[in-house]
Image (cartoon, rainbow over all chains, first blue to last red; front, side, top):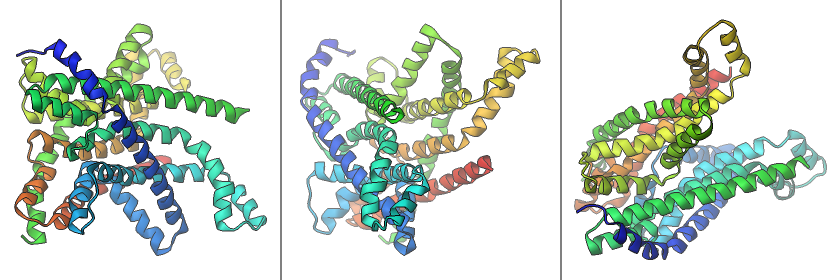
Length: 219
Length: 211
C-alpha cells in the first residue's frame, strides 16, 4: 500500500479546519485549570480540614492519568443526570487534571514573594481578600508567568486526548478521514506534524514573553 | 459485580501496565543519558541535530505520536507488536523530558569540577563518567522520579492500541456492568496506589539531597 504523499497533503485543509477547536480547548482548559489551581492553592494555604483535604486532592490528581479522569467525568456525570457535551467534559477534565499541577506552580510563585510583603499588608490592616488581590496576586503573576506558559504548551499537547471522547479537534478530524478512507497512516502523520509545529510555535511565543518579562523585571 | 470484584478485575491489567513501564524505561534511560550528555558536550551542527531529535520526542503530543507510530510503521513495512510500539513511543517521549534534566544537571555543575579533573590529567570521558555524571544524576533524582510517574500515567494510553492494561480492563468491565462510578473510581484509585508511593519516594529523596 505504501505512504501516499498526495493523499497526505490533501488531508491538510480538512484537519486544519479543526485548528480552532484545538486552540479553543487549549485556552479554555488553561483558564479553567488556572482558576481552579489558584483556588485549590488558596484553600490549601488556609489550612485546617479543608486545607488537608485539598492537599490530598492535589496529590491524588497528580498520581492519576488524565485519560482516567476524562473517562471518569464522561461516564460518571451522566450517571448523576448531568449531561454535557463532549467538548465541555473534555475541557472540564483537562482543567481538573492540570489544576493539580498549577496549584504547585502558584504555591512556588507565592512562596517566592518576600515575607515582608504579607507583614506589610497586615501592618496596613488590609483584610485577607485585599491582601491577596492587591499585594500577593500581582507579584505572584510575574513569578508564575514562565511555568504557566510551559503548562499552556502541555495542555495544548493534551488536547488530542479529547479525540477519544469524539471531540472534533485535529486528531479527531484525522481519525474521521481515516475511517472514511480506510487509510490511517497519512491523516495521522499530518496531525502529528501539525501538533508538533503548533507546540513549537506556542513554546517559542511563551519563551519570548518570558524574556520580555525578565527584561521588564530587571528595569 | 461487587466493588471488590471490580477492583480485582482492574488489577488484572496491572501486569501490562508494569510491563509497558519497564520496557518503556529500556528506551527512556539510554535515550536520556546519551542525548542529554550529547546536548551538553556537542556544539554547532551536531548540537542542532541532537536538539532536533530531542525536541521531536519531547514536543510532540504523545497521544498523537502513539497513533502515528502504531499506524505508520506497518505501512513502512516495519511490523512491531503493540507492546513494542507503545514502549518505544512512551519511552522515548519520557526520555526526551529526562534528557533535559540530564543536560541541566550537567550544566549546573561548577566549572571547577571539570577543571579539577583536567588538572588531575583525567580524559574528558573519565571526567564525565567519574565526576560530572554521578553528581548530576543524583541532583536530578527527584526530576527523574517525576518523569517515571509521568511514564506510568502515560501507559494508560496503550489501552487505545489494544493492550489489556488497567484502563482497558476498566472499559471492558464497564461494557458488561453499568456501574461507572465504582469502575472509574477504582481505576483512578489503582493508579494512585501505584504512583503515590513513587511520589513519596521522590519527596524523601529530595529532602535527603537538600540536607
